Structures are given as C-alpha cells and as structure tokens.
Image (cartoon, rainbow, N blue to C red; front, side, top):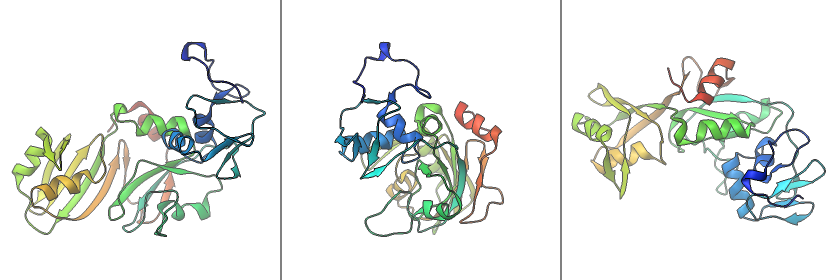
Length: 252
C-alpha cells in the first residue's frame, strides 16, 4: 500500500495509477465514496491483510483490498439505474432488523454490485438512484451540485398554505432549520415540494412540527429524471442525457 500524500503531490487517479482507498471502494461498487470513508473509519477495510483506518491512504494495482473479509475488485462495467422504490423498503445495503432492501429489487437482474445514491425513508416511495460509479455518486449526491428532488405528498387533513410559505421562506423544526425551493398545493390535502439538500425525513418533520401528518410521500423527480410510467418496484437504466444533466447539477 502506498503512503498518504499531500494533495499538491497527487497525480490523477486512473488505470494503473494509485488511488485513494475510498475511491477504490466506490469503483468496486461496494459503496459510495462517502460511505467508503465511513467503512474505513469503522475498521472494516483491509489492504493486503492489514486494517486501514487512515483517510487519504492509497492503493496501487498490486494491492488486495477487502471489506468485511470479502475481496473487492474494480467493476469493469458502470451501471446507472433508477428504481421506483415501494413503501416498506429500506435504502441501505444491509439491515440488522431484516427489513426488505430496495437494492434487493435490483440484485437478481444486475450482475454488478450497485448501491443507492441518497436515501428514501422506509415508508416513502418513488425515485431512488443506484450506481457503481463513485465519481457519479459523489457528483449527484453532494448538496453543492444543486440537484433538485421533487416530492408529492398527501395528508389526512387540509394543508395550510401558510405552512408551505413558511417552508419556502425557511423554518425551524425540532431544532433544525429547513427550507424548500418550491412548495405548492395540488388540492386541500396534497402538495408538491421541491428540495435540494433533502435531509433525513425533512418533509415529514416539517409538516409534523405544524401538526400536519403526512400519510403518503412519493419522490417523483430527481433533477431531469421523472417517475413517468415506471411501475412501483421496477427499475430502468438512466439515459446518457440524464446522466450528463445529473452530473452537471442542472434540472428540467
């Protein structure tokens, strides 16, 4: 394993060149770069049989990298998928409680190991992206990229327009400040919300803080990717145009 180097001394990562350990993990399809960093810090990654926990460590072509005892290899084929996740499925690569995994709807049909970009909570449904391309995952998943996520929700009670106005202006719920890009009523009990950052259970927390319980929540758009006619539980490949727009952070 090659030693850690200063940023200004590093050469571009690519075939035959040393690369950061978290980048290797991402290119193997085991996890995104961010999740790979967490795996390293947790002591779950070994290089040539030695546990590595230092961020910035690099590996070369002759190094053997393993995660939880399973050897990793860089995937030759990159996959870019979008799933219409049903309610009840967890956005995780494993679950100690044994709940059904969203990735389990893809695994039987995709040879490569793919992982989800971002999350949807267990009881929300709609669009969820999967890939084994760490660079793509990092570009799409980082809030600074500005990728919009659009949600359609339904409540058991009428939704005050003042709540939507507050959400767009920025409000505090459970000690956190949240802000939507857009919010509009579809009818008295349903609305569409557009977020960029999209924190964990953000919409549910915001609405609950104002006494409005969200009954159903569906993510209908991620950047240029629309739910369209994609059936619940089904997935498809992203088009080249969708990938390019997502990487650039532009939306329709």
